[in-house]
Length: 318
Image 1 (tube, one colour):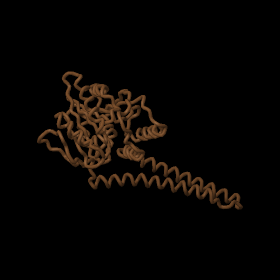
Image 2 (cartoon, one colour):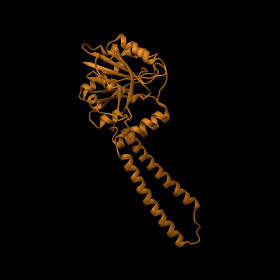
Image 3 (cartoon, helix red, strand yellow):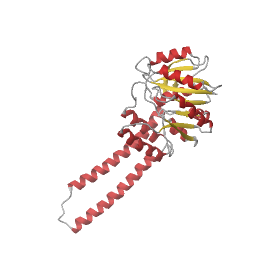
Image 4 (tube, helix red, strand yellow):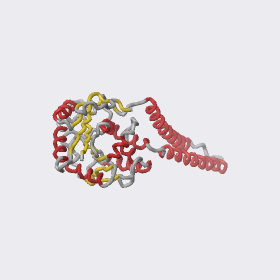
C-alpha cells in the first residue's frame, strides 16, 4: 500500500528534515508499504523551500511545492491534492508535534471503512482563552452542520481514496476541507493520540488567523447564520413592539412620567447592534460570492521539485 504524507511547511527549515526522516522510518516498518511525502512551502520567510527541494532531489518519493505567497495551512494542503498518488493521505504538521508512530493508527481506522479520521489530542494543553474559544467554535460548527457531534477536529488527520477524489472537486478559495468532506460522507471518526512538544518555534496561528478560520468554517456550508440573524431580528422586533406598547400604556396611566432618555438610548443601541450584526453576516456571504465570481485562486504554485516527469499539474487552482 502506498501512503501519502502531506506536510504544510512554514519557517521549518531547522526541523523539517528530522520530521521527514522520522516519518520515512515509520512507514517502512510495515512490510510492503511505501511512502510518498508532499512538502508544501507556504511562502516561508527562511530557506525552507531550499531544504525541502534538496530532500526531493535526494528522494524520488518526495515532492516539494513552493507557493507564490502565504495562503495558510488549509490552502497549502489543497495544493498537494493534485500530486497525491497514495491510497490513503495523512496530513502532518511540520513542527514534530504529531507523533509519526501514530500514523498507522489513522491509516488502520481508514482501512476499517472510514473516509475522514482525525487525531484527538485528549491531553492537549491550551490556555483559558483558547479552551473557551474552541468550545464556542465547536458548538457553532455543530449547529451549522460543519462538524459532527462527538468528533474532534485536528490538523493531524487521514483521508481515504474516496475523500481524496472528493477534494479534487472542491474549488472554493475559502478552504475548509473537513467541513466539505462532512457534506460528502458520514464515515468520520477520531483516534486518541497524545500530542508531543514542538521541536522548536511556536504556533503560527495568531488570534486573527484563528478568527478567520472559524468564520470561514461557520459560514462556508450553511445558511444557519443568516437564519439565526433573521430569528434574532424577529424577536427583537417583537420585543421592541411589546416594550413600545408598555411605554404608551404607562404614559397614558401616568401622564406625569417624563420621557426616558436612558431607556430610549438603551433600546436604540440594542436594535442598532442587532442590525449591524445582521448586515455583517450578509456582507460576509456577499463578499464570498464576489470572491467566487472573481475567480480568486485557492493557491498559486511558483515551483515544484520532484513531481513525476511529464505529468501536467495546475499551478493556479480556482
